[in-house]
Length: 342
Image 1 (cartoon, rainbow, N blue to C red):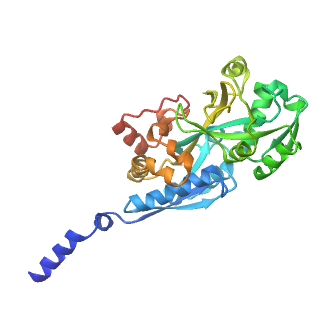
Image 2 (spheres, one colour):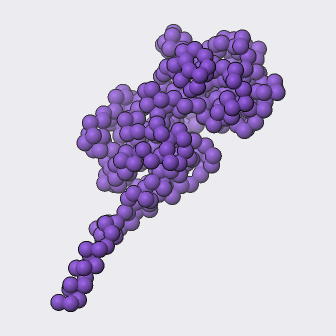
């Protein structure tokens, strides 16, 4: 009786996660991320820590990769037992090309087993300049543009806009450079404009990438060369079919005087995705913990303050492209994916 009483007493004082461990064997997952220092890597590192602190049996390790294409190819090469234990991130365009077996996946063929868990944020490519005469993409003709490295997603976004929307790609001089060189190159006149990045967290919250923050801190007269909705809609019928859109950016929304007028950005979602055969309970638990602790992201970096569950379904994909575990959580909370891409 004494021994039984002791055991019952210990069960009473054991923390809830210890009790949960008796029900669930610890699950160790691997999250493939973009290079260290990127927005994606910061997000995923925060996710990993949030999961560690707020879930009793799921742990996530972060592994750096060179980017979205490499992640998708790695995911596709995993054995079925490993597929269940990996997460990755990818923008809508990469996921779209993978399922079609197009672009960088042409040799590999169609990769169709991925399912969306949630949208981390929407990626918005743009261009910034100090030249007051550059007000639209057409004004970039004959100008030198500082690009990120050639394989960087923003470089490909800029190519898309310059070629398909403004139709000036063959009339500008592209200079590839590391992101941390952009500020000096713009300030000393080596380039006339630089490719920038931004992030949407919701329909109303837009923040600029760190490289733009640095330039903003150095000069007040930085100008944002955005894509207007009219520019996009006028050429949309002739554009390659891609899951993207243009979202508005209001004047003075970043800080007073920037942007100096209403404009827009060409944007697509950066999604956390998994393989279709991930256990439904694990997928559900990941989305649930991240949603319930979304407000804590601001403790990791300032822009995290805008991260919220409502943004989890801000992408182009239909419900058929979501993992059942994620859909179960969204249904419970009254959130519904509005995309149409299958």
